[in-house]
Amino acid sequence: MKNSVFLLLLLAGNAFAQLPSVELAAGMHLIRAEVADSMGSRMQGLMHRPSMAQNSGMVFVFEENATHCMWMKNTLIPLSVAFLDEAGAIINIADMQPHSEQSHCATRPARYALEMNKGWFAQRGVKPGAKLRGLEKLAPR
Image 1 (cartoon, one colour):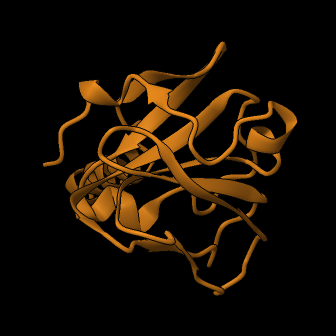
Image 2: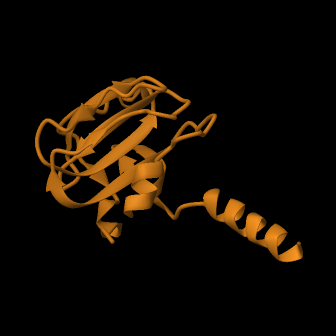
């Protein structure tokens, strides 16, 4: 009995384990972004979270440049996603609604995607073409 309780606690702890984070910058705006750089962490994304701090987000690191897409199944909070090229320049930004299975895709091959609370980019005047700093700290697994 003790072993099964321990196993359940261990599994529950892993399900809610914190991802590593990195500090990024968009102009003068600092971002604390959790890093989703494995297949499992990218698939989980921000699902089931009830909220996210104002200048926090999640950066998705892809193994290759491709036309990556995001969706919001099981995601509780509205988000904006910026697709970024290898140099960290924003390709395009899309607003996404909670629980939607609609795909939002990069308009050309992207290496990264950064999800923030919906409207974060627009409220700060961060637009396609802007370059984010700090991505050089990331390496795909």
